[in-house]
Length: 65
Image 1 (cartoon, rainbow, N blue to C red):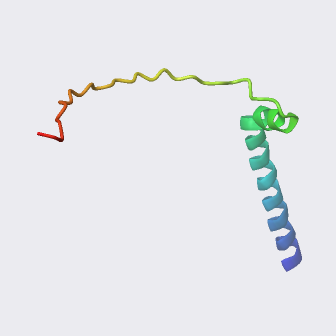
Image 2: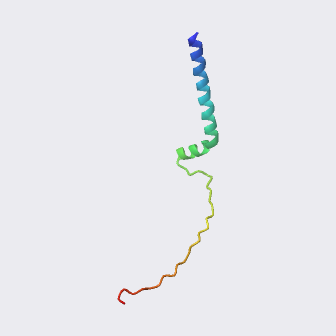
Image 3: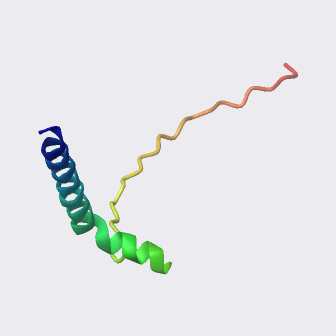
């Protein structure tokens, strides 16, 4: 009776691995294929970044006073 339960557990685990693998390939399969071909991925996201600089006023102090 233990052999059918072991087989059932094995098949359920195998099914879960296949389902998870299919979902990963559905999400990022195009990127993986592009990387294997050596081409950059088509989607490039550019985010504009605002850079604010603060100017400091620095007094010149002579060492020789």
